[in-house]
Length: 142
Image (cartoon, rainbow, N blue to C red; front, side):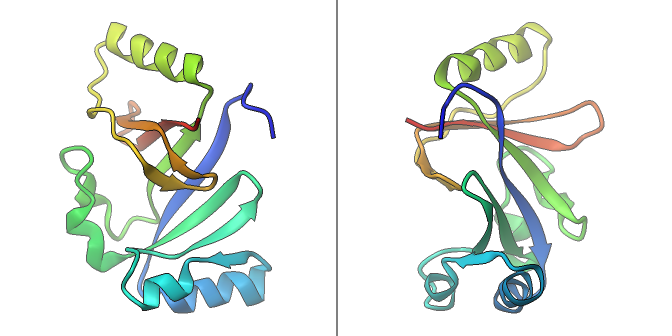
């Protein structure tokens, strides 16, 4: 796996029952479930399913919507099919994107650290909205 191109890291899907959703994606779609046991034990907030070696779907219970506060109004996405889309970028592209967004006056969240995704924990991440109000996360892995 190289770090030289932009990739789709993960998509957060709102679901009613994350364990049932993981079962559906495993049995019906053929995706590998991740962190289901940890979710049922209360150790993580949501389970995921692996799309490929670089991409996962996070299965977020609607009950955590009020805690999805990475940007003002983000919790209002509960009930919509997707909370946010995440792009994983090399370090230089991550910094360049943040600079371009700043130049164009696009509001951004602070930089977060150690956020879980398809390739483990990311060193840095931040959020912004596109012109239609969709939330995009940008992240950089070591």
